[in-house]
Image 1 (cartoon, helix red, strand yellow):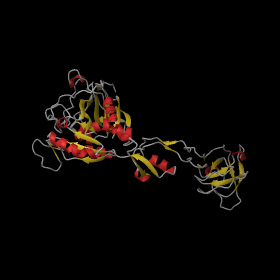
Image 2 (cartoon, rainbow, N blue to C red; image 1 turned 90 degrees about the vertical axis):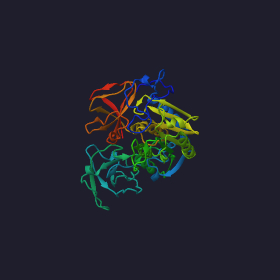
Image 3 (cartoon, one colour; image 1 turned 135 degrees about the vertical axis):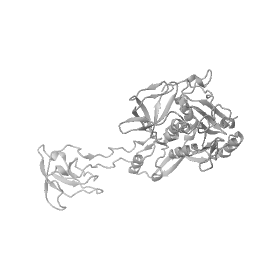
Image 4 (tube, helix red, strand yellow; image 1 turned 90 degrees about the horizontal axis):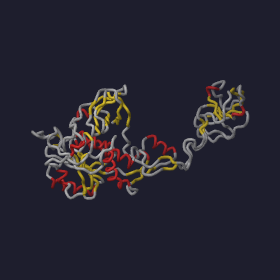
Length: 441
């Protein structure tokens, strides 16, 4: 992606009611970078993401952690480095069902060795005497004196004798260390086991359990106030009067936030009365870590979030991104504040581009979106001065198909997508077959 100017610039002037969906400005047109206003350039995607990171950095302090048992820590972010308290594995053990042997007892052509008492998993093995072979199970301790394991399928006969018998077994030559898991071969005591900020999935929790750890210190989930705005927006299930639309943003963003591990306090839909919105934000601000609004952040005549933020340390600007250009960022009564545009796709793309990756980087949760490379199944055009994010479907053949157009109101296309397709600033057109970066959803 090409970095544009990083100055804090006001957003473009949009008609806040031009969209078929939520207020907050239309950001679907192919405009030149200079359209945002004379003498100003839009902020780059990277620069705005860094601003969001700086805004939330203080929330990653050591006092904002909690200890959880492993079974409750799935999906959480590790708050501090963990050092292995023991070797893993804690003792040398067998990688196979077979015979524990001294490799020097078996010449190149193989030999017969007397079979001694078997070694089951969990038992403490007696020392192995020269000229003998001990049946050993997978995971069982290697007896003192032994240095290799011959798999049972290579023995003649290829089965274990009855316990207590005085049978012999013919074994092929083997090398020192074959099929032996040495103590500490996975991780040694005192070595780093997991780094702070790691997202705790099944593999990470399994490692901690294998090290004997029962509790882990993780970052607390952030509590977010989510406020949807607009006189034209009504709750689903209400009568849909002329000029009104159902609120998709509340459900869309709440689901995305909960999926990302956030605790969401969802406020009632705010009207376009700035005093009412200010009062609502002020009421809930002391109880949350972050405020997120949708709509009302462009430069139209009825941008309620802009008006409600008067006197607050909040900036409204335009990011060189489509959809999701108009953005707000700062603090409301000292609480971190992020204002997203009102169109449904715009607000979700804003969450995925700015808030989700910052949460992942600072708190280890949620896990980052997997980024892959895929080839376009069809040609695509993009405004050269903007980072365009299109919705698409990754197909079994490794190509990615566009779903719907660039419009930020196309919720049906979003619902039928499994990926976000990135067309960086500076890209005006790509042919079918061109390789692009894709984030899988």
